Length: 487
Ligand code: AMP
Ligand code: MG
Image 1 (cartoon, protein in one colour):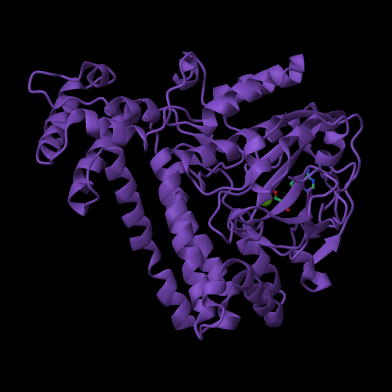
Image 2 (cartoon, rainbow, N blue to C red):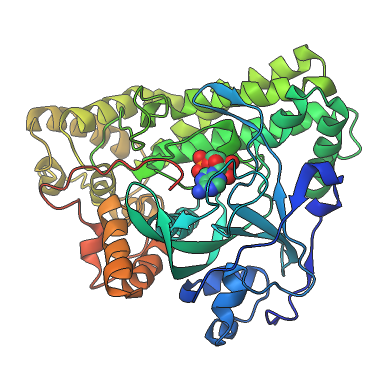
């Protein structure tokens, strides 16, 4: 296993021409303190988890010291933010340290919050502790849920003051991903009128991530088609679990279909299709129920950026597949959550249920997990579910139809329940839970809550005896917290 000093670090991305990035060193943070380290992520790059015990671990994990061989770069990209094109964004507070070939895959290591870069546009290049804890926990929660995501290796805190609405302190997260490239990585060159750069980047993505079609004559439409398919699948997974990203700008959309750039995200507590987690999003552009359509809009921006590489008809043919890909995945996932075989004929039943949950203001995750115990016995009214509803007659009517569907299958309640518990999480990163972990770390220098929460979230489908309070709905009076961008 590797130590910080022997980590075999390369940088394939820095092999691209120099105008794709800017070499930039991290700005040191004073008195860094390792608040948490994630051994599951360390395993992916063959890093010895005992390295976290070294007195200088925090220095390596915040960028005060570099892994030998690391040549940090800030990547250039652009993006459509809230519908408007911004010609130059780029890593304003992130640095790619390089990549490491792990036992199974190659992982890029990236610092987030490591100080200004040539793309910082006058901002401080920092991330506050609050948003860093949220990203750290949520990326591992998504991993636990089985949803494609960037990962998080470590969280380092510092007393360095950072000014947002109030004074806060800085933190640095070490993120890991097979790639941090975004839709905006293509857009920047398309809008600058640099089609050769678009081609160079497409070839790079194909070579490193989709070598299976490197030699195909239609490799560029296939690249676009692959991004469309993985994005459609990701949107279905977000909708099925009740995750709202909050800032679906094209610079936050991963070319690999990963959940990327955790900011003001939120999981639904009660089922509210119009839920807006980002308080800067006054018009609800990125509301929960808009996400699948926004992804389609963003994919159209990507397709435009790739038009130097393919006839417009080819791009359109790929885009046209999105609605069916999304709907197919979403229906499959919802059917599985209900313990039903994937079939379009169940769609009215699914819609009726979601409407009922919204109208009765029922906690989405708790309902779905409780549904795993649904009894098809004739006299059983399924009181634990029924009691969640204000309109119990409406529930009874829905439950009668659902029961009929279940009885038509060759399955029994226990077997179906076991299967459903593997797709209906008990634990999600509710805002009020993240908030508790943030307060403990910020006000009491206590990272133990981060640790407890992370362990539960990395295995959200399991029972964790003694941890039931992490599965509860927000306490009475807790309003859904809306968080702003770029903190
Ligand atoms: P986000 O919406 O947080 O993904 O950020 C959008 C853009 O703003 C990206 O180019 C970021 O690198 C940049 N950015 C956000 N916060 C900061 C910051 N504190 N300092 C410098 N750049 C930032
Ligand atoms: Mg971003």
